[in-house]
Image (cartoon, rainbow, N blue to C red; front, top):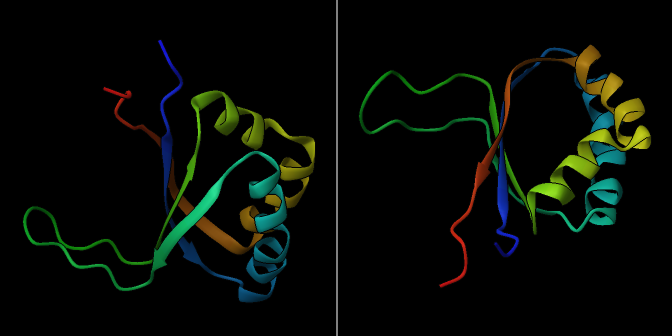
Amino acid sequence: MADVPVYMVVHLHVEDSDRYLQYEKGFFPILKKHGGQFITYDDATSTFEGLSAPDGRIVLFTFPSEQAAQDWYNDPEYQALSEHRRAGTRLEFLTLVHGLPPR
């Protein structure tokens, strides 16, 4: 099976903006190192149906494959950097969603 893109969906609450800013500053170079691309973030999402909109921040980014996403997450440089995220936010989830295979 060919590699399919994957999408990362993150829901977090920024509780210490200085620590989170340290994380953000180092995040993008490591993301790019693993072929990742930032899509968007939103601090005020809307829900059309179902439960109420989640409070906090939703972040979306993508990788060309699940392996690239795993390599990013397991990168020692990312794990060291993520200590700032862990200290500055309350993470609800960091979820990998598979894209559709090529047709």
